[in-house]
Length: 258
Image: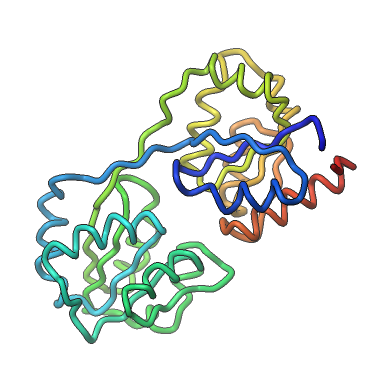
């Protein structure tokens, strides 16, 4: 097996599939989440109101698997049987599968697992006067909301969880990268990238050129380059399959076979 390792940074409990896939291909894998997740309890006032009025929405959008998990926890407290006549959406294959497990037909953008991809769906083109609920975490991008507002929709949010930086110091992360001989880092969101960059010890520039970052989109790749990272590879999307495919291509190009 190669002496170098790949660092996987998905939130705790969400990295097993990717780690198993990479390990099965002979790569040594190290896990260190770059985000921690906690439910918002109680819900913010506006989000609580949105849950109570769930049957008034024509469109409900889940932006991530985390939004499905925490969102349905909140919804289930008030809607043991979900209302009908709603268009349900998900960004990403895994997110769509989780929504589908609740018994709904789900619309998703397929391989283009981004807000921009979702916004290209035909059913979200003419939404003037219609009510849209976005199920999401606190903070994050506003592209989806802003574009739907421009199209005349009445947009509300169910903000049901918060993301926080990991509880690890820059010194601890630097030691982990060194001891484990990490050569590539899998980052599946812009926020994870920001946290990873923030944890780089002050004045440390070696990692900017030595580490290869694998990111899920052109947008995150651009953010990485603007932060100074020089070795950045862009996967098709944030799914385990796409991330693994890009990591393995990197391994093969480097001649780092087991």
